Image (tube, rainbow, N blue to C red; front, top):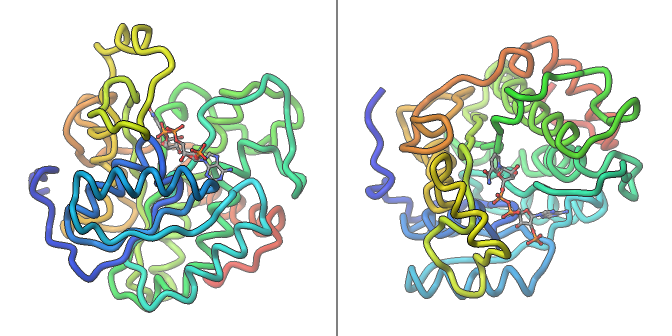
Length: 306
Ligand SMILES: NC(=O)c1ccc[n+]([C@@H]2O[C@H](COP(=O)([O-])OP(=O)(O)OC[C@H]3O[C@@H](n4cnc5c(N)ncnc54)[C@H](OP(=O)(O)O)[C@@H]3O)[C@@H](O)[C@H]2O)c1
């Protein structure tokens, strides 16, 4: 595997990427790094105001950056369908980054307007339906990629594939980890199905290690921290989100990586982006296939790759 220098990205002029949650945190830095490589980047976010602030910041650091906004609230499948229609109509789509997510939440189980557990829908099911809608544009673009944001929480919380909706028991971190097991399973199953269908689109997973706003390169008006002192105390085992975004960008742009890759920091929670392995449970084809059917049902989606 060739080495990868996050500071010397391949020229991506003429390429188009969509980053969900591109207005904040890891998503923001993914947008900024792709824009620096010359790509056009669309921020799919639920707040036009926060997306505008992020675009203004990117343009401050990358003069002339080519950016756009797509409204998207992953907790509403109606909103996901509207965003999907916009993505489907793009002339080309070189990469779709499934980044947005709830990283904190309520102590009680909540459901969305669509009847799904809120963390599972926001982090995973909304992305499943969005990817289904965007697939025609991805497939019109040779060598396009879908990158899902995975997580080390899957190492800590074992998968319970019988309780993905947290009906039997709810804890936010448990529900969060299930949503990330689901992202892993989805990306690997999508990659298998795309290959079987003869498509050149590939799916991969990136995880940022442990990435904190407080350790990030400052981006006034975009990256703020409520508890900078507490977060800095954690700095021994964490990195800034500017570094945390580099596995995602490598998964999107490194021509040496193939579909099904899992990219994360060299020292697990921090460091340069290198190929790694997801936990076995969420990587199993049995889980991927079962997850696919459940996700089609829970999102009322007929995914255009069988
Ligand atoms: N940070 C880490 O150490 C870490 C580790 C492993 C995995 N990850 C994953 O990396 C991704 C980004 O994490 P982060 O740390 O950058 O989080 P963050 O700073 O909290 O940013 C989360 C992003 O998701 C968006 N979002 C939340 N709910 C949404 C919804 N219903 N519809 C559309 N967008 C929504 C947020 O939008 P608003 O600004 O509108 O709230 C924001 O743009 C997540 O998927 C997370 O699970 C992070």
